[in-house]
Length: 82
Image 1 (cartoon, rainbow, N blue to C red):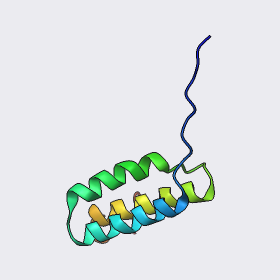
Image 2 (cartoon, rainbow, N blue to C red; image 1 turned 45 degrees about the horizontal axis):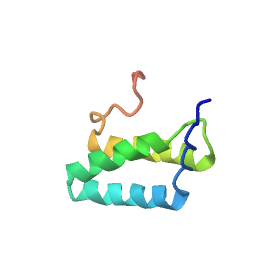
Image 3 (tube, helix red, strand yellow; image 1 turned 30 degrees about the vertical axis):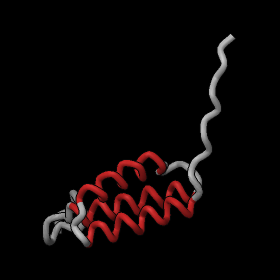
């Protein structure tokens, strides 16, 4: 028989929210090491098909990434010609 270790529960939503805030602050301070580390953790916690907190984390990670790599001026909707 194999014994399996129980998987740890996901961190509370409040810690994800705090990490999102810390990441936003790190972006404004241009602290790329903290931004990269936090986004890596947040991506693991996010799930577009998960619970509401996971879905919100997914959307916020996408928004934070767009702050780091903004789209070119005038191109607000990819693939849509105006």
